[in-house]
Length: 257
Image (cartoon, rainbow, N blue to C red; front, side):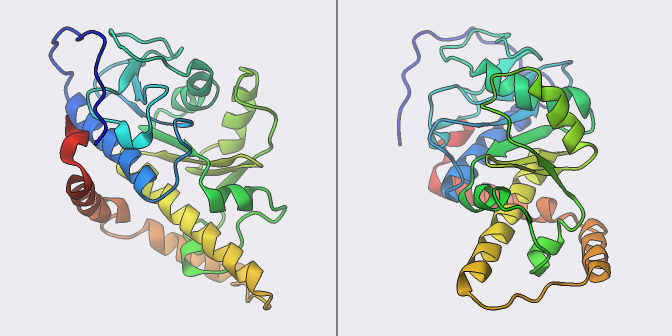
């Protein structure tokens, strides 16, 4: 386990209501993205609102691997990406402001924004047809995937308005030639959406590589299955998350520190 030695210790302060749980869940999410091979070294972000605080968000310290993220080293920033508490780590402000901050501001219903460059989803984002209705897993997203055309690296604030407009009220986006974005009402939901989107994209690529003729699912069946996913009594992310936390604990319980 990698040990990060702080330059200075931030002063002790009482956690805001729910912040500790949010930190643990977000740190776990970073560890899970790394565990399932969906990370990109120290780049990209997963951000979460701080419960009970206005315009305060948590994100990864810029320069740490996802496998090094812990509940305590997450950085708290304002809506402009500026740290609001002492921290020993830098913040990738453009990455937060252009993508994450924009979605958080436009979508008060969303608590977590996950953006990564997972291999299969990035590959499918480069295909003109995008995600195809070929498997039951893909049908979870039938009619629910937004697309945003590639413009540049996330340095241009002007891109934010177009990205938010393309996302609309959806929770899943393929950013063309770039990667995926999921917007969850919880950290667990954002991870679940990203994991199953990546899995659907991976299987689609394997089907395409097989050289066989794929059997598309009729649109009306796709709509029915997507509705079935949404109407489950226990949302998948609520059923999965405790098991995933146990997985992260087995790998390295230090993420809770």
